[in-house]
Length: 114
Image 1: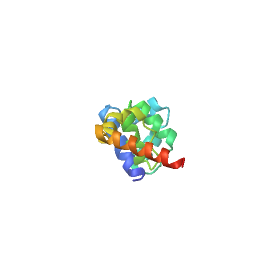
Image 2: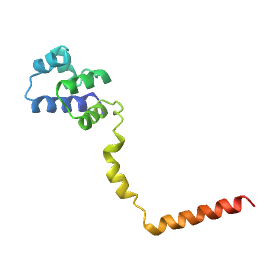
Image 3: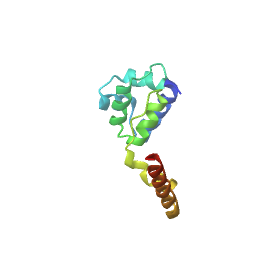
Image 4: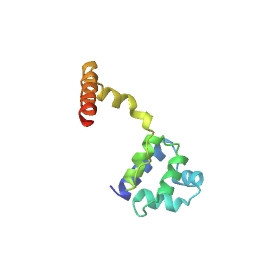
């Protein structure tokens, strides 16, 4: 994805918030021309600019990652606790599995001292 993909997402968020390019520019402290160039893909935004525009549009953190990726930038590091429930469910162990692992570890520790 490149600047055009980011520009489309930015335009969508701006329209959701019912802001003109000028309104967004004033909120983000940039020129309206720069907002126009970014939306049209004529200008590629920096990471700081993406985050400034996202902040001005009150874009939620998860959606900010989509904006960063669309601009060809690395996403922010997500909160590790955010998906912990899904991960824990995916890797749930059965009760017997733990006993087998414990016995194997005991065997390894006993045989390694011989």
